[in-house]
Image (cartoon, rainbow, N blue to C red; front, side, top):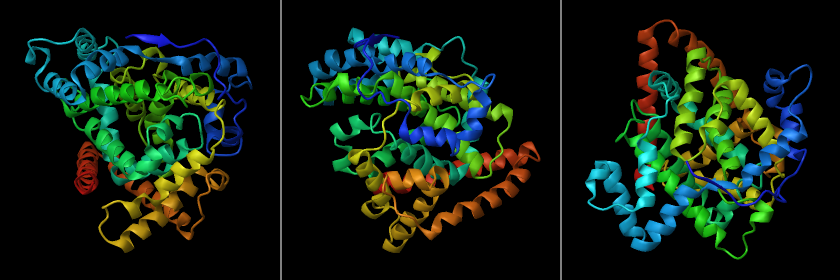
Length: 403
């Protein structure tokens, strides 16, 4: 896996201690998590945070070589066709393949020695059994919570995410997540495997073209879609996702928890993140998230705009179909934003309050009762996995086909 370092300098984005995330770890949802990694009364130091900051200048040079050596040589349309042919039929599907692309596919096809397929599938099954609440957590905790950092989201501004609206980004994320969490989806030629490789290329496209914009500054923001922020995004899908589901009354088993981190470690590997950067368990994940978050600058006008766009996204999209449904959904999602993120964080992102902030408490109580039934037997568990997957497919179809 080729990782290139742009510079040893700590970018100007470095803000320690983070104004927003310090509050999360001291007063908010991170308070209990922090206790799990505090050793002899001491938490990770500023030296740990500074050491991590070099990763804001590291990037996936192997994927970038595919952009400059294949996409810009063949043209994007033909390059995407070549990529799809290889993903669908293997490298033998083409009589001639560019070295950069062949190297990337060979690496993706190489199963790492640390991978436990059964444990990975346990993690994917946990994602499936959480049904609609998985998507609620991803949208209102993982995605909206990420807008508290102006730095990690800055490439979105330069690539037009604010102008194009949050609905497309949310739909693309949903499409990716449903693809990778399917049963055996991460096997070679599976929909999740192919989707992960395509996302890796998409990240490289964003990185290469953002850096060519005269207004972008690596010294200020780090390299776009850098390894440090990629790890944080991966933790959003694993650790933050796990905590959100716990807040909603889910009681995952130890096997499910370990499986979840193993599952996302493999996806991170396919996305071009060095496996040594990714956690093997919850404690490592908490430590890494703390170290990343404690240098993050607070939300600025750009990220407030992204938050507002996400809040209003049901009104601008085609799903759900009825306007009253769209307006109701805006309020329900806001309720979950306040439930997961807290009033201070929501006010920093200029999110209005709503009486629907009490809805998540009712849902959590129902889920706690349901969890007891799910864990009673293997039959009940599998029924929950199947039912949750059906809900994911229905919601994905509604969003993707309405896009």
